[in-house]
Length: 240
Image 1 (cartoon, rainbow, N blue to C red):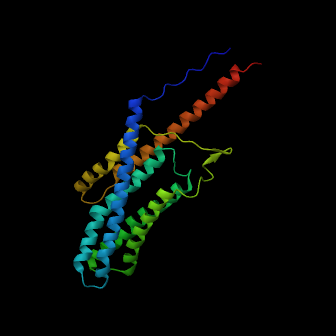
Image 2 (cartoon, rainbow, N blue to C red):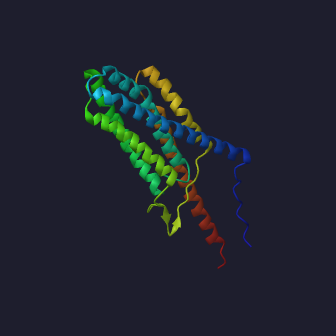
Image 3 (cartoon, rainbow, N blue to C red):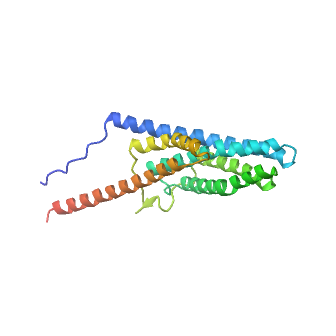
């Protein structure tokens, strides 16, 4: 009879509790930043509508200040925490249709917000003129966040083509607690860095997402290696 393969010790109760605590904190930060992002988008809409008529120049300046000082950091935090929660848990980025849809919406929002909306607000602050497209854009941003909230609650669509393998659902490993701790701390570091630089800088949040992606990739590699080793061990111990 071949010797039994020693099993790897599982995480202790304290370790599991720590992992659960940091994951919940990351979810909490994600929810708060997402609600804040949507609130800021609605506030921009409320400020820009009267400015569209040309009678409230102060509203344009207030909208520009709100975008650079509050909306941008909240949007970056929401995007970073959402990505790390997907990379660090069994949900994954492309395993479930609702998660993949949220990912696409988030990336489009961040791109349009940084390279289109913010630049349009810079121009509006200089000229004190607001275009109808800018007002519509803020309304669409708030609406897109509302759609993402519905996706998180309803979780429609089931699994994607990458969510199954050989007719079985794909299971993904959970990241260690420190990965979630990093993404929780990243927004605070970004705010401090932005105060030093004088403009929004999501460098720490980007670094947290990169860390989450690297950890996920290494975890999948280690799991694949363990499975191959286990298969070789079983073949080697099988009776001739």
